[in-house]
Length: 131
Length: 131
DNA sequence: CTGTGATACGGGTATATACCCACTCCATGT
DNA sequence: ACATGGAGTGGGTATATACCCGTATCACAG
Image 1 (spheres, rainbow over the protein chains, first blue to last red):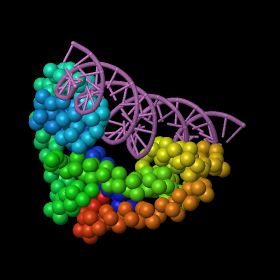
Image 2: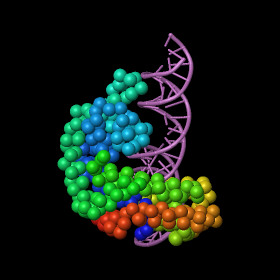
Image 3: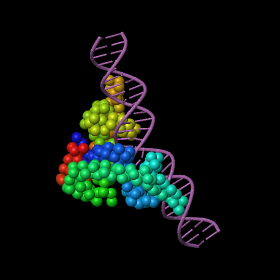
Image 4: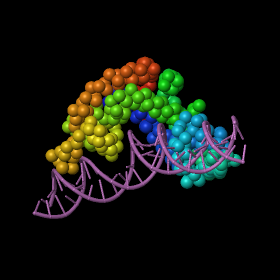
């Protein structure tokens, strides 16, 4: 067993990701993509830069992930008034995926929440504010 | 703020990884590579498959990560008696990197250990056994 | 109205990871 | 001895992520 906290944390994140991904499989998106969809839903119409800032990810990462969801027709991008800007919106399919995915996500979230418990969630929050 | 435990956990893992990577930067390896080096040190001479099993990673991942460390001359692979097998060993440079990296790793580990606290580590362990 | 610096994005490259397929090599049963 | 199946690896492809650079566009100072 690895006693490196970092490696353990990475593995935990991977396994939890796999669990969420499996839960969301019926709607054909990963948890990273689901998260992106939710952010777009909240912020649309929104630029890639604003999305990236809001999600705490690199702009290029958001751009690439958005492209994937464009290919599967869950997102669409339209040029903004500022021609440099690419504005992202949900498609109807995207909205439907979000609606159908919500209870699936809830289940996974409840399961992990139960495993972590209140103290686990607190530790996680503490970690996020500390690093 | 994302209220998805999975996304939060992923971000936490990324940030902690960045912290360890920065700590290990003087010896020019990432924490994933450092972990691989340590496993090789413990198990050498060892096949890729055994390494992968021991580290809980995919065989192909270990193969690729090993190639990276071969390029930087921290690891070497020699053909095993079984010609299918590729046996991995530490080079002198690899051993030196491990020795020099140990205190750097310790520092990062201590810092994250302090943030997590005993309850945080317990939660993490609980998570690992549950998923 | 023009030039310059700032901003938005895309693409290249890199690590880390997984899964699946093909190839090679071994080992064992007939 | 040979065939068949299993094991070990490598490579292809995919996602998710970061950083850096180039290009296009904008906004503002002069």
